[in-house]
Length: 598
Ligand SMILES: Cc1cc2nc3c(=O)[nH]c(=O)nc-3n(C[C@H](O)[C@H](O)[C@H](O)COP(=O)(O)OP(=O)(O)OC[C@H]3O[C@@H](n4cnc5c(N)ncnc54)[C@H](O)[C@@H]3O)c2cc1C
Image (cartoon, rainbow, N blue to C red):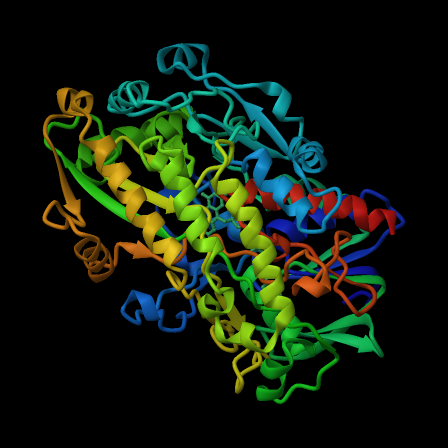
């Protein structure tokens, strides 16, 4: 370390951390240190869009979750990036914002300035949209609205190549009663069938990551920005209640070092590790800290509570006569495989530029229920009448604030679900028989807690990770919603337009024999086809008032201590009805402005 004192120390050089580091060092007088656990990844997996169809686990930590009681006590791999650029290097690359109503809900939870209008300038500031070719736009009827993007560092694009069977799916959408086709997917419209961009840099048809967008362009020129890799932060250092620095350990030599912040420490370690780092530093639920033998600096029950993710049903169908090529051709046909890779290397075009999906169908609860608003209202009234505490994790029992916060969230979710302007589900349409259907507005809440015996001090890649309890399906609404979503999906896949184009369609997961609620749920769970997570964890250090179990205020400062902010997916109080990264970038851009304002 050239020096061990900087204006700002940012913990986590992931998606959010690199945005903030870039923006703060625009001022040459401001010095910033970023401490990152992972290293630089220059493998093709981190660069070529096609690889977003799979998982590069070599740059991820994958602790096992706690057994999920309602999923047969199965333990799931928790997918956490450990690499410069964080989740943006390993994710599926879809770029989709939630609806206007989703962010207005954040504002309604006590966060002035965090509604759609407050975030839109930052959605624009962070993004650039490059359209597909004129021919592709005409052939696929792709429309967009430039007004919702800017000239920002993150590049987004809809590839011109699309698999032919996508046409069959679009024909089927056109026949869906009540389904809107609003055009631009990132305008906050909510429900509809959309062409959705991916974080592809169309200049060279590579993955647009936080590293490529925010770090590489300034790395050589900004001497006021320093990034340390291979360093795991163990603890935030304090003088009294004022954060002064960070203690971290090098994976290379296990040496522990400290760095100090003249102005602020900013935690950007993501929704799984941020609560762990805060808890390890004495900020968190008193019961968790006591069990782990950690002295309480600030009792804050919400640190590690309110975990939300997107439970996903992995429906599968068999198309008897898919067109050639199909999304499976690259894996199944060596000749095609060789041709498309050659095309990518020569022209940066073709199927290798595609991620798993450029299409998403978003539906409101009433649409899921066959355009039945009365039935939607019934489901909403049912969860509103629940005794909240009965359906929340253990951690909530000792905290009236957490329960009050959940009840406030629940009232807002009820409004969203009763409205035609917010989505309860998202179906990713891929041009094959793969059909992930996502529950976007779960009422169940999970937790992230420090291991009582292992606080993450070892510096070792795998050790010291927190215990993640997804707690999927604890709230009966989630089960009812998933069943309704599955039945709605079945009706869509039975559309005769599809059969006319791709031959008879047969459901393989969970399978046509599963008809009653119990059969469907048992089938999905038994086949491992109900995932607790779409790698969208958030909410574990929520932006809400302390009286509602929140951890940070609308300025993202941690309640009850000084000079400490959190900026990453953990501050989202409610999970948006969309993929997460677009929102993560906008939150970090807005946070950078707030930090500069002091
Ligand atoms: C497999 C996968 C697929 C996804 N697919 C999509 C998708 O298609 N579309 C979409 O919009 N979103 C997707 N997401 C979600 C999205 O990428 C994340 O929400 C987003 O990247 C999270 O950003 P973050 O800044 O909160 O955390 P991260 O980007 O995870 O950054 C946290 C950083 O902190 C570092 N760190 C953690 N602990 C420490 C420590 N103690 N010391 C030092 N450094 C530390 C980590 O190494 C990491 O680099 C996906 C995520 C994953 C993992």
